[in-house]
Amino acid sequence: MPEKMSFIFNSAQGLLLAANYLLDHMEDEDIKRNPVKYSFILTAAATLESALNDSIVSWSHNTFPREDYKRHAQAFLAMSLRGKLDSIGFLISSGKYVTDNTSTDYQLLSALIKLRNEVAHSKDFFTEVEVELTKDDDGNEGFILPSDVAKKFENSPLIPSDEEYLKTYKALEHLYKVLNHDLSYEQSELFKNV
Image (cartoon, rainbow, N blue to C red):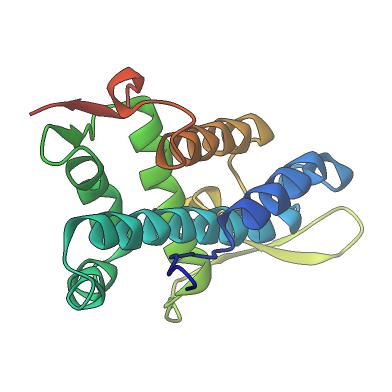
């Protein structure tokens, strides 16, 4: 008589490899305006969500009766990405640990979520400002933006250095290892005792 076995398939590992690939190609273009950074942000955030979703489903499958686990998993899967990150420590440790929002890795993953939201859910409106018109020595016209508007360009998702993206990748890789039981949550600075 055949036995029943449960399997789960997700894309987290493939996405993590894709994020690593993109990370290796950031220096191929101009550092400040490298379009590969957009791809990295979206791929890394998709990796984060896929890994968290997989852990939530696995936790639910191991915690609740088979006929109820999907319903309970769906309740957690409906949370925001930051909500999933915040609750994952509590879930995987059966309430012994929580995600430490003061840890460096948490701060990096939280910043990734913010960048993802800026890139994927951009909701900028036109800004009307008075500009100072200029002319260079060759007669070419230009303008100078007010400092508050110019500052918006400094906060672009393309501005963080390649080193910052590497740190983000390392934090993502660290969480992936914990969620895949390659590293114990007790040994991770990403989680702390309740």
